[in-house]
Each structure stands twice: as C-alpha cells, then as structure tokens.
Image (cartoon, rainbow, N blue to C red; front, side):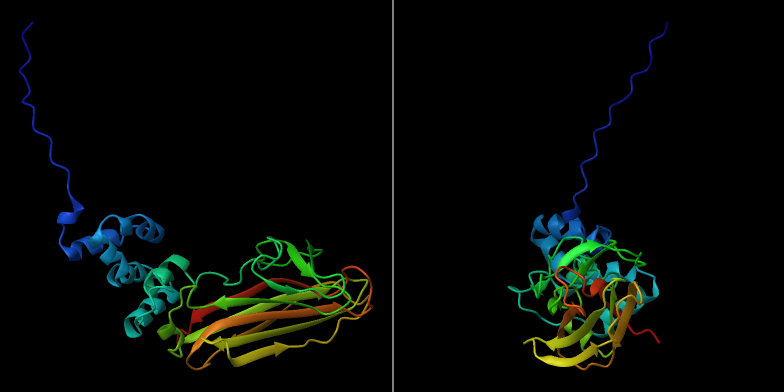
Length: 278
C-alpha cells in the first residue's frame, strides 16, 4: 500500500480580541448582549467596556430593536428627551440602562399585588383583627395569583410607594407630557357580609409632596346582595413636571362589625406606565 501524503499542519489562528475593535464596533457587538449580562458581567471586564455600558449608545441600540408601538415610542422619546445627569451614589447605573433592565412599560409596577408573598412591599395598618390573605372565591381575570387581601371589622389600611425613576422611567421622560399613568384595583365582598372600600392614588414629587390625586369611594356592598370582585381604574394624564412617586393606598372594613375577616377584599392592584401614542 502506498503511503498517504502528509498534510501540512497549519498554525492555529490567534484568538480574536474584542478590545482591538474600534469603539463604534464594540458598541454594536455589546448591544446584542442581554441587559442583565451587560451590567453584571461585561461592565466588569475593563474600563473601556465599563464606559460603553455606562454610556447611552449601547442602550439606544437595544431600545431601537423593539418594534412594538410602545417600543418605537420609547425609542423616539429617548432621542427627543434624553436623560440628564443623575446622582451617581443614588443611581449607579445610567437611566437608559435601568430602563432596559427594568422594562417599566411592560409590567405592573406594584409588587406583590395579590398577596402571594404575604404583605411584602406594603406598609400595613391593621384595624379590628387586621388584614389577612385568602384564596379568591371567584376567579379574577389576569391576576398573577388567585389570592386576595381581606379586611376586618374596623378600618384597615395599606399603602405601596412606587418610585418611578428607580423603576426605570427617567425624570425627563416623566416631565415630557407624553406619559400616562394607569392605575387599577379589584375589590369585592363576601356574600354573607357587606363591606366598605376606598381607594386613593396620589402622584408625589421628589420630596413626596402631593401634586395630584385620584379617589374612589364606591357605594358600600350590602349583606347578601352579591359576591365577587369588580374593578376601579383611572388614567393620570397631563400631570405636569416633577412627578417621581405613585402612592397607592387602600382602605376597607365590613359593615357588620363581625370578629374575623369579613370586610372588603382587594387584589390585583396595578400601576402601569405608558407613552401616549397619537
């Protein structure tokens, strides 16, 4: 048998070093990395990568790839009303990075809206036998958990303060007059006991001073009349400049002063931000 010709061994190609890329190409490459990995991994690689992650260009490229109506509107607003300088101690990440990480236009900004995590995230004042968390008797559409908060025979109060800027909506965007803040709440009563429910939602400035508010005081539900939940909603528009916080406040009690938890049920509370699209 004849011998096979030897194959010449080619030297291995040297690994490609991303740090040799021109800055504009490095931004393009890193813009395809998921936001969390950009912040937790890429930012720590070297000073050049940190500067890219801390700058606006890589995040604008990520925003530009969202072709939904709200995504296109957000990208246009980021170009028209770019974030200004911020206190680095309070906000170690740039505003556009927070926006891409937190995605505030895609989700409910109320944490633990149905009591699936007990009272985490809520400031609570107990009246009577206090608040409790129970399973829903009737299905609430769209709720992340079929559980609810329930009140007692004296006024019960709870509140959640939403920091819009920390959630990813930068201040210049809030001040643009193109933002709408949509609030909803579901409430109801047990069939065997009447209840009273109140909702108050306040928009506050940086110093937590009230700027504008919405209040709902539906008629009390009478005993033996109905069971289940109904929705209260409101949209804040043209609320002026300086808004930073949403204070979401709920009150409830029963009408019979029964020991236990027979008062108003509240669940699936929601604060959502959207850009007004003409």
